[in-house]
Amino acid sequence: MAASQTNKRWPTAKWIELARNVLANSDEKIVLFPGQSEKEIEEAKLVTKNVDPKRRKLIINESVRNIALQISGLKCFISNDIGFLHMAAAIGVPTIGLYISTNAEIWSPYDKTNFFVDRSMVASIVAASTITKEDIVYEIGPGEGIITGELAERAGKVVAVEKDASLAVRFRSRFRGKGNVEIHDGDFLRYKIKEKKYKVFSNIPFNITADVVKRILFGENPPSEAYLVLQKEAAGKFSGNPAETEVSVLAKPWFAFKVLREFRRTDFVPVPSVDVVLLLIARREQPLVSPANAQSYRKFVQFGFEAWEKDLKTAYKHAFTYEQWKRLSKNISFPLKATPAELKFEQWIGLFEYFLAGVIDSKKAVILSR
Image: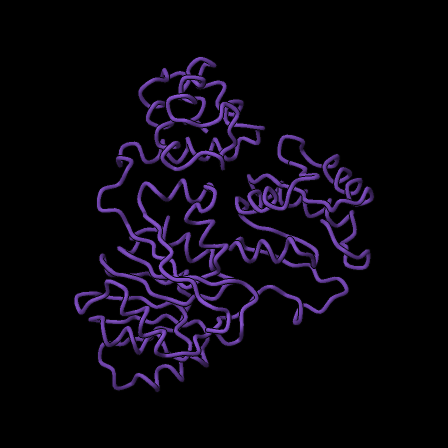
């Protein structure tokens, strides 16, 4: 809701209308981030008074780091033209910008793909992968094909999925003579992958980062490996570095994450406004949570992150006794009043394992019946 100038702000009545529509048409909750001025805080409080108190949260006077952590857990961020909008886009959260008096073409954070400048650099990062002639590799949004060419030299087959029709025409013409390269017109997010075993290597458009990564992590038939060029902040969100997020804790039993390379902004054209890295997402051969407990694990983690309590001790108070929580805090080495982001992934696993073994079924049901 914040905005640096009055003429950038959406009317309070519109925010109330939007909040009511979101709550009426979904099971989601809403979080409000007003600015620091008294007027903005009062406007935000007015919005909260007009919606279900159990499904809204007001964030006031928090540090930038804590705000970033809050934003990273959102499914969508809607904002006036302000820094938080750019922060959300950089983290990889789907965003909707409201441009009241500013030019979205100039100030919008929604970048198209930033293409590599140096072909030798592309060759080096593809060569550093585990891709061989035994592999089928999917590339998302190949553009002019600078990465595709290098992939075709190493992989048995490259399947490029390009949404931009004009780029797809040029791409098809360029690789007409390459028998191991296929081009498909369409949206990767809706494309059905037939192969059971495949890898992904892509420089994805920043504005679809979150959707692409979530399909890889939580969709059917995930790849054995995915090499993704994406924003550094988004890589941190998904890999849980420097702090764990809901998505990182949910994914890590089945995937390992590693930043393989940090790029210079001048390695791309147009030059991006954020730092960029190459992130490897590798599917674990042996999951850290058994298939029988997978659904319980997801519900347990989601309950902790989405309970809207001041700390995990309060969130899980109906499952763990105080003595149990105190002993876990000591044995697993986390603060007694830790927040979800303050636990490392290994501590989440330890907490869940005790939940399965040490909590009676009636108390488990409080968490698992959600």
